[in-house]
Amino acid sequence: MMTDIKVEALTADQWQRARELRLASLRDSAHAFGGNLELESAQSESEWRAKFEKLSYLVATIDGADGAIMTVEKLVGDFGATAWVGGCWTNPTFRGKGLLRAMFDFVDRNALEKGWSCHGLGVWEDNYSAIAAYEKLGFVAMGGLQESTRIPGKHYQRMIRNSVI
Image 1: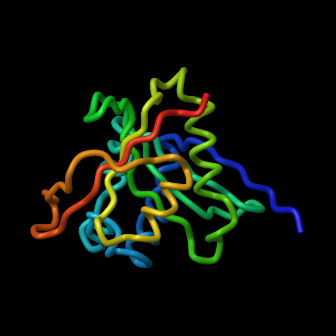
Image 2: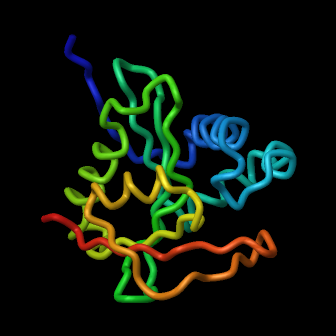
């Protein structure tokens, strides 16, 4: 059966979609993120809209249903990163269907226009399934483990990938 996967960058007017997917990610996989469900649930519309000033929210849909989300922040980072990827999450119903790859294909197609030529991200050192997924997309571990500023005692691995353009 063919599935129709589409990726779009949300606008601030679509903040509710970003909020719903982010909160779903925290309900499903809080251990994988540095966020806090209670705090983020309480954020106002203006706080959610303000996030769009710094972050691009990408959403992948499959057959019209929102299935995955990630953010991209343009920056000058470690190891030449020009874009920091965060909050990558796929609804468990849609895992293994290519949504993460589709979102990175979108990043690659827009790399020149957006300045996203080298992608960096941080992944908890014990999140082996995420590390394996990022390695399949061409990410490589760079540098030593970093201590989290949000969750004391937790460490993350920085990973870097050049855009495939």
